[in-house]
Each structure stands twice: as C-alpha cells, then as structure tokens.
Length: 312
Image (cartoon, rainbow, N blue to C red; front, top):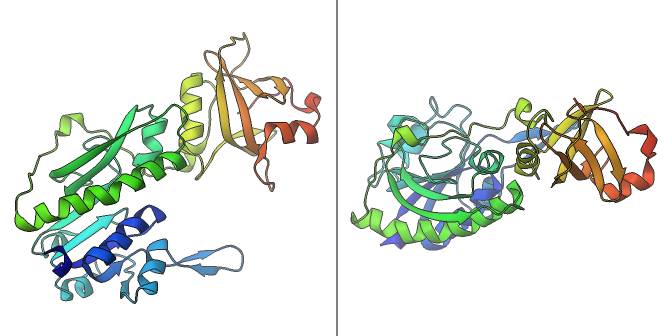
C-alpha cells in the first residue's frame, strides 16, 4: 500500500535527507517542496538545499515558493495522497494541510509538546534536557501543536553537541516514519492531543542566543557552547573581537573574580570564571582564522596577552 502512496515531501536541511531517500525508495514521491536557493559568499554563488539536490538527482520536480501562504496552487494541483514535512522552514497554510486524503504529517525532532519550534536540537542541549526524540504528528495551523501519532526517545549524553545529537535523531527518524506510515494509511493509528500546559518552545537560534555571557553558571555556559556546536557556534567578546567558542569543560575551581575573567591559560584549556565556578575552553576560533585546539592556540600566542582579561 505504501508503494502506491503519492507523496509530496517538504523539507530543507541535511537532517531531512535520509527521510526523503527512504520515501523515494518506498513510496511514489511526486514532488519536493523546499526553500528558495541561497546566494552565498561575495561571489553570490547559488547554493541548493540538500533536499533539492536529492530531488534533482532522482528526477523529482522541485517547487520553491518564496511565500507558501501565497504560492500553493501548484502543490494542490498535484493532488497528493499525503504531504510529509520535516524542517521545511515555513508555516504551511491550512488550505494545503486540509487537501491530502491522509493529511499532512510532520517529523519533528523533539518529544512534543516539549520544544515546539525551529531549533529543537540546539535548544534541547542549551536547556539542559536529559532526553529528547522524534515525534510523528498531524499538522494543524499552530506551530507544532497538532495531534501526535508516534514517538521514539533518544538520550542526551553530557558530551553531546548539537552535531552529535542531530546525527542520533536523524538515525531514528526514518525507522519511526516508515513504521508509522502504514497505520496512517489504513486508519489504525492513534491520535493523541498535546497537553499545551506542558509545552516548551525552541525558537530559531538568534544572534543574541549565540552570545555567551559568563555571569551565568558553568553548567549553563557549557550547555550553550555544546548546544551551538557545530552550527552556528557560540561566541564571546574579547578586546572588541568576537571569539568563537567551540568546546569546553566544567571546572570545579571557584574564584573571587568578575565572571568572564581569564585566570589561567595552558595546554589544558583557557580557564574562564563563571557565576559559580569556572570552565576550561578547549577549542576556539579567532576572527578570520580556522578552529583550533587550545594547545595550538597556546603555541601561537603569548599567555600574558590574555591573562586577567575579561570576556564580555
């Protein structure tokens, strides 16, 4: 039955690629909807989304509405049996949600109603969650508020970054979707309403979110740095320059110094005072330079140029 399913897939980032590949293999994907191409760099080179690349490789029509709320007729004309979305990047209007025979379902990277929104992977780590997962849900006009169909849990290790957690969630998303699809088609799936009182939100990462302020606890600083690794990266300001902070460790030492002060610099790490303890920054990036380990940083810089300076 799944083989005969006419699917329109809507998604954009690399996270969705295994899902689309699986749908191409198991269903009849009649079109892909993804965000418009980007212009990147000084030369303004056109870059396709990862999903568009897969679609073109498989000779699947690609639609890229600038504003899907206004440009939806082409999608309706396809008359899909089902629309499957994952990290598409735009709010899908009700006229589309109500069109397919089997509805419009979403593969969301959290255990709803926790972490509704566009950055559930980053925010699960930043907020200090111990577990997250994938939820398959029916879409409605709200932001990730539709009825839930199925879930799978993933533990968040203390050493996970957004990148490693992304990979864990990506790995479990395909089996869950393919296990769930038959029950949607034959009508045996269960619909569970979300408890709005338990909802939390994971809005897209803003520039303000990327700024590390050391007048916070060591744990919160640690979670923010790993929660933004490997994209877009956390930063702090030193000597009016944005320094990217990629990796760190919590240190149990306590200092009577202003949070943000660099109190030690060695091959073990750059020790920075926080609200309660200190952290050791072990990988960073200077403006215009590549990422480097603290060992390489120490070899190329004078300790005296950084000691007792304060991150802002």
